[in-house]
Amino acid sequence: MSESSIVTEGVSGSHVLTIDGYSQTKGLGTGNFITSSRFIVGGHPWRVRYYPEGDKESSNDCISIFLVPDVTSAVAEVKARYNIILLDYDTGKPEPDFTTVNQSQITTFTCNKYNFLFLNYPLGRGFTRFIERKALEQRTSFLWRWWMQGKPQPTYIRNDSFRIRCDITVLKEFTTKDASLMRSDDVIVPPSDIDHHLGRLLSSGEGADVAFDVAGETFAAHRCILAARSPVFMAELFGAMKEKTATYIRVEDMEAGVFKALLHFIYNDSLPDIEEGEMAFMVQHLLVAADRYSLDRMKLVCEKQLCRCIDTGTVATTLALADQHNCHGLKESCFRFLRTRGNMKAAMATDGFEHLTRSCPPLVRELLAKVST
Image 1 (tube, rainbow, N blue to C red):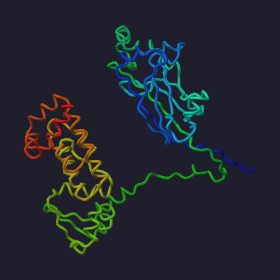
Image 2 (cartoon, helix red, strand yellow):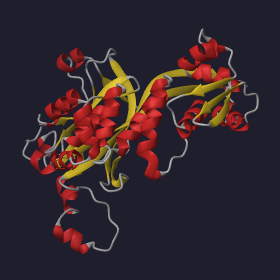
Image 3 (cartoon, rainbow, N blue to C red):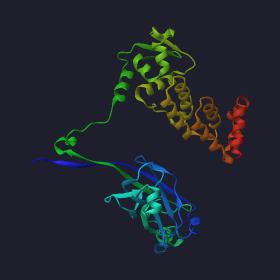
Image 4 (cartoon, rainbow, N blue to C red):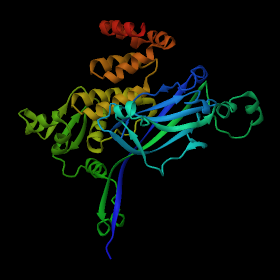
């Protein structure tokens, strides 16, 4: 007896839609909708349509939610499974009473504008009676909160906002395979641990063939690993530079702790643990080091971390750093932080902002233009 299996390959993704100013949307009228921003799942563009007063007269007491493929897609149709879920605003967890489970059903979405306009094919799929407005609103009323006080209950609306999540699995293809070749569950492949082995190589120093003197401390390393990770080290250790044959190299203008963290990232592909109180200061130095050695991923990791550390005490130095090292995302985060009047006023009182004013007048003019718009 022979066996075969039909295998479905799919790509999954989710999109969370926050309805801010819920009470202001209730006068939109039945059949009218607000559309989410465009998002991509399975290589296809999608949007979520929110009907605050229902998509038709029979559901005008409800909120309707529909998942809609973008008609600019290059394909005529997409097969997918989807769920639409109401989230607890505080915890972000799904509310079981208002989770529309559609994962067992494969739905065909038309992406062809001609089919939609002239052949009356449905453009989107979803739920006409996703949730009654009365059910959504009752848990925010004074009587409900008084009655349920002391009892753990989900919160649907917070500050006139609520959230829904759309889960999509796009089915890519159906293939038939010989079942005798599909016993892959007999073999468990562990996750890659190459970083663990390289990190151990760094800490042991085994096989090291170059040493660096940084502020009086010596660090052993491996030429091939450094060169593979950094084009600057490649040129320095294997190019025409004088360090090509040197086994002992002095590094200027860098603290020993920063160089040690730099080596940690090169070998482990992650930043070392940094004490909370030193986070912003240390990561600023690491970003400079990453830029110096053209470690692009490390630079982006530092940039992302600094975005989380912005406060009135650090924003001026962080902005100057972002401008100097072409960190556009970090620079925009600083501008966004300073657009708040209270933040701007507090930051201007710091020594860092005074230094920024003296050393980078064009950047300050750019900042003032940004915050005034």
